[in-house]
Image (cartoon, rainbow, N blue to C red; front, side):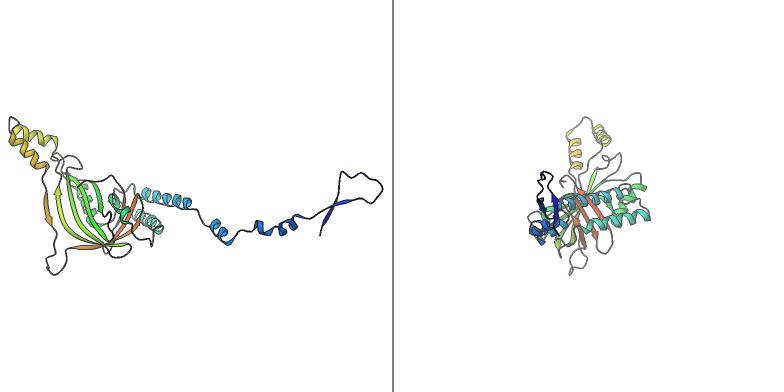
Length: 282
């Protein structure tokens, strides 16, 4: 129904008053329905979170995961409640990347271990915690797969030391090399090839002892120091059965972006949390 309002500017003349007829707002909206109706596509876009919001949410969940593992000494010291919280945070982050194929260009590079529950790594951390003459420094995983489509090389790098004989934390390097092949969009098969001991860094005390034992500082003492610095021992990893390929294992890469890598060792049940590191030269 139209509403009539007397004009406040009308001067009475005794004649019938003129009125301004004003249609209600509802009539205007109905007549302009097309102008105020979102298309199905626009409504869908408006209802979806923006890409920026999703990326912000992912970064927050990754931060929650790193905060959950920060006091665990890379997994060595954990309680049942901590392990439960870590697994929950891990699964949450994995959910943002589920189903997407591994980007080998993004995977290529060096990743620093922040946390693991894998027994074969924890045994090294436990030994370092118990033995005063053994130290474990940084642990890395290095992928060499740039410009590859189906696989590449993976190197597990452990920096270790013997105090007073070698430099602290990174007096020597243990390198376990393997080929890897993509067997699905997320699973890689590792075929281990070689274990290498290299990069011996003699402590200053030992260098001084060698130099003083052969006086004056002669060519022989320099040769000894040079030999120790360049020492490398390589041990092939082979299967005793010649009819079968070398020792290997299945590795599930559950999450990957530019600065975080999550993985699960299929079979042993160990999980790994890595963050991007500076390139490591083997």
